Image 1: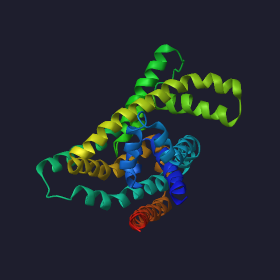
Image 2: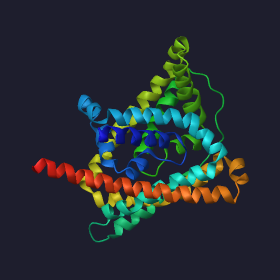
Image 3: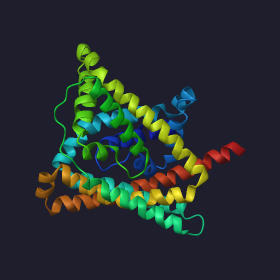
Length: 304
């Protein structure tokens, strides 16, 4: 029961990270100490769908709720309190760094570990600066369905990588609002309003979106699962580089998207944000300790 409740709330946080530019579903799953499980779930989704759903259903439901919440409530929160919200997420990342470092530094440091660490940082720092004007003309037809499918597949692939934001990529190429607001947001609005004619009409654009998500995450998860087996130290140093640069990407992305509210924020907002950042880091470290104790208890039970 504890695992189901934890998975549900972990899923909500991952769902939030999927939608917000600068945040990463893969990064959030690292923060929550379930990255390998998250990757293996999507990697095995096609071959073992029933087993995967049995193990991960609470996480998937939480992710769906997190996506809806971030489209609605969290966007509102970032509009009115961007600094505290951004620093809270920065705290989540900071709290996860010691554990990732321990994973990465199990053997002596090699040149390639340093190279992939720097490469990971460079990718995350560069992404927020790549932006084009938003595409505002939305009319759903076959060509738009293809665009939605391929862009969603690209964003989902990026979301599997800790520290790389799929939504940041959508924002950079100008399709963030179309995909998250006009496609996904409109569908959930119809669903929450129980407007069945609108549900069916808005379901059509959601289909290429859903297909892109599944294909992108399943295919790339297989690659990540392979990398974890073959070259885990270099892979974890890449993750460490991605996450070390994430605080910059989060704050800069929030500044770009909510610039007016960001500029108007005073000293109080920064102080509240710093307190929330410390609390968030403490929460992550505590959760990791709890997870370690829970795993130890399960191991002891298995031997009894």
